[in-house]
Image (cartoon, rainbow, N blue to C red):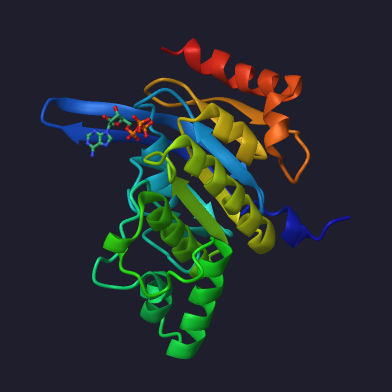
Length: 260
Ligand SMILES: Nc1ncnc2c1ncn2[C@@H]1O[C@H](COP(=O)(O)OP(=O)(O)OP(=O)(O)O)[C@@H](O)[C@H]1O
C-alpha cells in the first residue's frame, strides 16, 4: 500500500470557471474545470487556440484569480504567486538582460536569501545539465533563442519547486531545437521528478513528453478528455514512428479537430 502522502494529488483544480471583463462585455474563457494531478506526473494541456490553456496555467501559478473555483498545490490553496511551491517557464525566456546566464538562473535563489556560493553552485550544475557549460558568463544578448530558453528552464528547476508550469516553452524555436530541448527537459525531469504541466500546440511534442494529455474544448474551455500516454520511458525518437504513437496523436487531434 502506498503511503497516504503518496496518494495525495500535487495539484488540484476544483470547479474553475473564468470570465474576462472586456469593453464589449464578458468573455467566458473556462467552464467548470476539474483536474487532479498526482506528484511527479508530466501532464500536457492542449486544445484549440483561445480555449483558455494559458489562462488555466496562470491560475495554477496564482498569477490570475479565477472567477469561480480554486487551485490547490500540496493541499494548500493557491492565492498568489508562490515561487517556492510553483515555478513558471514562459514562451519567451524573459531573462534579465543585464545579468549573466549564471546570475539569471541563480536569481530566484538570491531573492530567497540563499548564500551566494550555494546558489551559484546550484545554478552552474543546472546550466551544465541543459548543455550550457562554458556559457555561464554570457549575457542574454550573446545567446541564441534556444540557449535563452535553456537558461529559462534551468532557472525554473533551480528554484526547486515541486511544481513546474510551462507555457509553450519551445514555441518560438525551430523544430530541431525543440526536439533536442524536449529530450533535455525529460532528462532533467527524470532526475528532479517535478510535477510538470506543459501547455503546447504541438501534438507530437505532447505525446512525446507527457504521461497524460488533457484536451480542452473550444471556448469556453472544458475538459474534453484525459488521454493516458502509455509509452515506455525513456522516450526515444524512434517511438514517434510507431503505430501506437501515431494512434495516440490521432486520438488527440480528432478531438481537437471536431472543436474547430
Ligand atoms: N486579459 C484578458 N482579457 C480579455 N480576454 C482575455 C484575456 N486573456 C485571455 N482572454 C481571452 O480568453 C480566451 C482564452 O485565452 P488563453 O490565452 O487562455 O487561451 P489559449 O488556449 O492559451 O490560447 P492560444 O492557444 O491561442 O495561446 C481567449 O478568447 C482570449 O482572447
